Length: 133
Image (cartoon, rainbow, N blue to C red):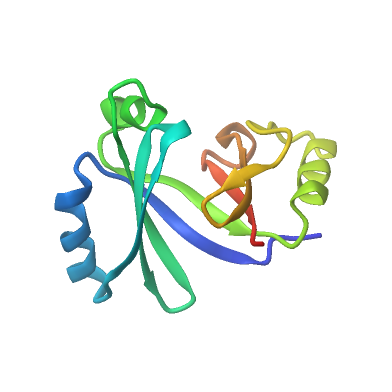
């Protein structure tokens, strides 16, 4: 098993309404989806270009993980989403290799099953594994 492709690059932003037009101009593409992810207390917007997309993430309250991220680091790269064929097999492979996982089991996400891999085991980059439906 290996990662199939980069699905998205996620950028944490303070104000989604301000960020969307800025990123649309930057990438020459339009926001095609905007979703409230209530359990994570964030709203996300997707801007596609080529065979990948930018995911803008903005907190809906100051207690969310993204709000804490923004407070500590400011706006910028939050994580990279990697598409996989079999998320359970990938989580097993990574765990057997000693990689620290945030999610030891896959959970429902906006575009399929997801799980996060701790930056400690990936050279400082938070990874999101995504298995599309």
